[in-house]
Length: 182
Image (cartoon, rainbow, N blue to C red; front, side):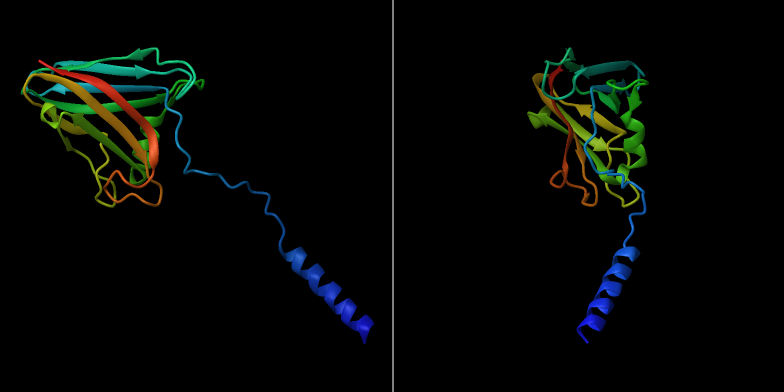
């Protein structure tokens, strides 16, 4: 009886392990933060079509060496602009355009533009994802009265948690541009 039980247990365990084979496929993790070494904000003045670009560049990414470029955003008082950002990972060859990935996975990303003081700029989203939440790859900025401050630009990575607010997720980008409205 003991031998019979041992053989049945051995056959059962062997069958169990033979059914749990590794498929050999590696699981690709797609919810990691992006390495972004370059951010360019393009402001196109409504009415005149004047294009002005402001850039941030940090070739080695966050931490390590200081950024090699961090422009001051300078806008005309009371003027309106369309705003389009570009995000690049220049640590790769060829350079990886992260903006394209944000477009493809817009349901996982939210750009937030926060002026301080708030009277310097009002931002209105021009795009939404498939769940009707804002994205921020296009929008309109209305400059206020003359003054100086900051414009915080955040790219929030929100896989499986995007709800239209900044709270869930983590930052792919969190930059404080100097902002001058004159």
